[in-house]
Amino acid sequence: MSTDFAVFHNRRQRLLETMTAAGGGIAIVPTAREMTRNRDTHFPFRADSYFYYLTGFTEPDAVLLLIAGETPRSVLFCREKNLEREIWEGFRYGPEAACTHFGVDEAWPIDEFDGRLAPLLADQPAIFFTLGHDSAWDRRVVDALNRVREQVRTGIAAPASITDLHRLIDEMRLIKDSHEVATMRRAAAISGEAHRQAMRTARPGQHEYMVEAELLHQFRRAGAQSPAYPSIVASGANACVLHYVSNDCVMRDGDLLLIDAGCELDGYASDITRSFPVNGRFSGPQRDVYQLVLDAQSAAIAATRPGAAWNAPHDAAVAVLAQGMIDLGLLSGSLDGVLESAAYTRFYMHRTGHWLGLDVHDAGDYKLAGAWRPLREGMTLTVEPGCYIRPADDVPEALWNIGVRIEDDALVTAAGCELLSADTPKTIDDIEALMRGA
Ligand code: GLY
Ligand code: MN
Ligand code: MN
Image 1 (cartoon, rainbow, N blue to C red):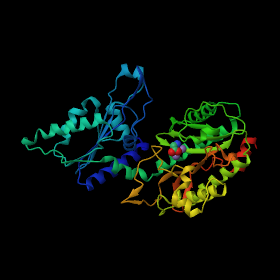
Image 2 (image 1 turned 60 degrees about the vertical axis):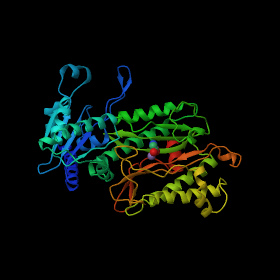
Image 3 (image 1 turned 90 degrees about the vertical axis):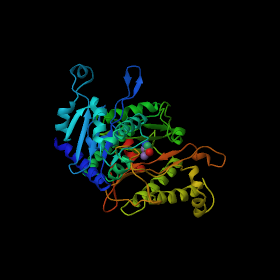
Image 4 (image 1 turned 45 degrees about the horizontal axis):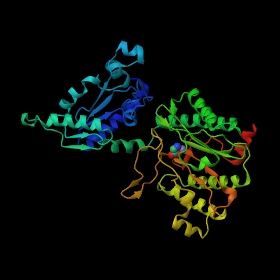
């Protein structure tokens, strides 16, 4: 086994132990399916996050089986070597090399999967599989189960239950190991440099997509495989559209530019937002709103520490934002009243973060038994307050169309949290200095 792949082996062992503790059985973990874009063209293939987490294997047409029991084992099914196809599509490991390289106990051609699955299910107490994720896979697993059930008169016992596998893996994925943290740190560093390059190059008169091109250029030249999600490059009023992705407007002198963009590196997402003036100088009203969001983010970061409830950073950000909205004349009444009525949601309508990892909105429950779960060392999450002000008669005109979000990627540490994206400028002085070329 390649040393890099020991980490995946260890995860499989841990999952097998969890399965054994839950009574034993067999886990079925398919990778993603290739998706047609049009006619002979496919969308870029990306492995299923759960499958990748347990294997590190990135070819399509693959399935992992984990069999808990006295001799726990992992079995990979993958494409066979095929010179003809490899001439057109590139290298494939084939079962023999995949077995050695990825450190599984057995590997077989994917074409043998259905034939081998039913005998392996015989006499297993349970199947660990996530139903409802892919209907074709649901059918395949149920068909195999039924083939075992048809044999019960021969004395074979069919698995008695199907247990949700993703929930078991989600709990593992929530706490990042050192391999994951190292990858996420590099992903955040690449994205941070892309944001700095955007600040250095954005100019009034350019289209937003020119900035998007700079981001993509930085991601790829640093080795990231793709953006982790469609980049948002939103100038002026577009910044108040939360999922703006057309990125096709001209950036004007005096606009703020909100960029929410992060690369995916070796499967792991980064997710960074910065908001800055296209002309390099914050106007007075832009400065006021920006500083408010930055203060809200500082409060949220201070509340991101082990033992704090998941919602504590959000509550901290909202308290600062709500007071600021009153001070800016966006809302009236007392702070308690604004918090109680949730009037602030008119200008801050999303939450302050989400888990981050293989998926940009990563796996894992936010509540346990109805209560916000406590943060723990090794969790990774975003901290991303914002303020979005659409024109309205009761809103001071100087603030119209200002949209600001500031988003960093945090790792919960023993002492509090570390921002993986800390190198991306965000104080007003640092941003203006970078844009001046200072
Ligand atoms: N870029 C997606 C998000 O911030 O949640
Ligand atoms: Mn985010
Ligand atoms: Mn984001």
